[in-house]
Length: 63
Ligand SMILES: Cc1cc2nc3c(=O)[nH]c(=O)nc-3n(C[C@H](O)[C@H](O)[C@H](O)COP(=O)(O)OP(=O)(O)OC[C@H]3O[C@@H](n4cnc5c(N)ncnc54)[C@H](O)[C@@H]3O)c2cc1C
Image (tube, rainbow, N blue to C red; front, side, top):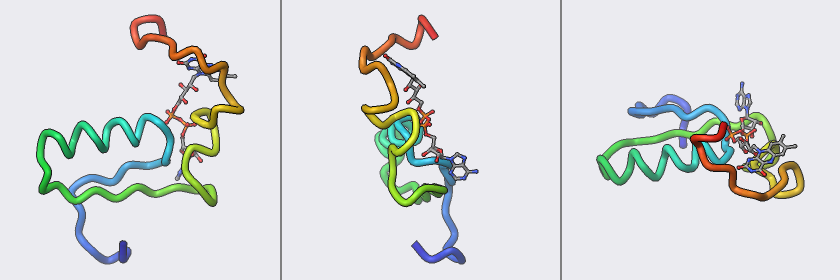
């Protein structure tokens, strides 16, 4: 997406939290324009990468 294009929501970081929030926001309002900005060369390269966490899907109520 061009950097001068207006968006409704900017999600900082392409990890699981931004991915989840993006899906939820689109479910609520399919017309929303979202932009995800990421420092790394690809998404899910930090904690959300399966090699960087224990892979046990901790419920939110535990965290
Ligand atoms: C060792 C370890 C084990 C874990 N085990 C489990 C487990 O078993 N079960 C479980 O449910 N959870 C586990 N977790 C936690 C889970 O992995 C994280 O809570 C989850 O991945 C966090 O997702 P996130 O999207 O918030 O962050 P991240 O996946 O870290 O994504 C954040 C993104 O933001 C980017 N970013 C940061 N700053 C900027 C910036 N200024 N501009 C642009 N982009 C930026 C980063 O590059 C990164 O891609 C574990 C975590 C660790 C570290």
